[in-house]
Image (cartoon, rainbow, N blue to C red):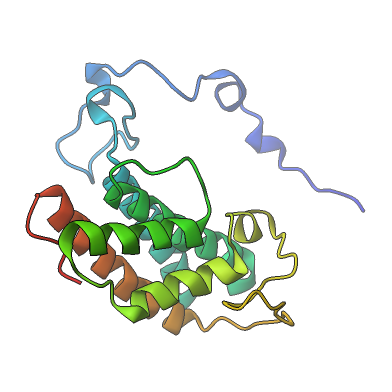
Amino acid sequence: MHLVMRTDAFTEEAMTRPLFEELTGDHAREDEWSGPHGFAIGGMMQASTASLAEEYFVAANELVEGIKKKRIADYRVGNAALFLYRHSCEVILKAALPAPKRTHDLTDLANNFVEMVKEKYGQDVPAWIVRRMKELAAIDPNSTAFRYGNYGTPIDAGDAPIDFEAYVSLSHLQAAMLALNTALVSAVAEIRLGRHGPTL
């Protein structure tokens, strides 16, 4: 196989300028659409877990919109979109939990969320939310399937192997993830505000 490399990609700046620069007044701008384009991390710009989850969700939606608007082929970014949607769910659950474990196990996080909502607020998490989280977990339990394309042998809710070859409808994926994200973001907001419990 012969790889064709773009020689114009190898500019001095591209190869030597640090990616993470000290934040200075030169980076100030009037609004999010004016330049210079970039973003700040750390310090006062430390992202909350909930806002980080929203970043992953927005990025997934942008990929899906790119596919729908024919800016990129679906097969080129499908796993990336699935990973970003799944990761947004994982991170929003971690934002909801008072002391989340350092885990990528979506089933464990979903179960902990359900238990916390029941114990602390006396409410049941709607079955469709739990079902959707466990559906993602069945294919990608530990955040390796969509991230690395390592699907292994997925299992269903009864621990039985799933004969795996699946199709993902783009419009359904986007609608389902929007519903799930909206419910979870709303619940986390209510929990963070210390209200009587999440509205689910």
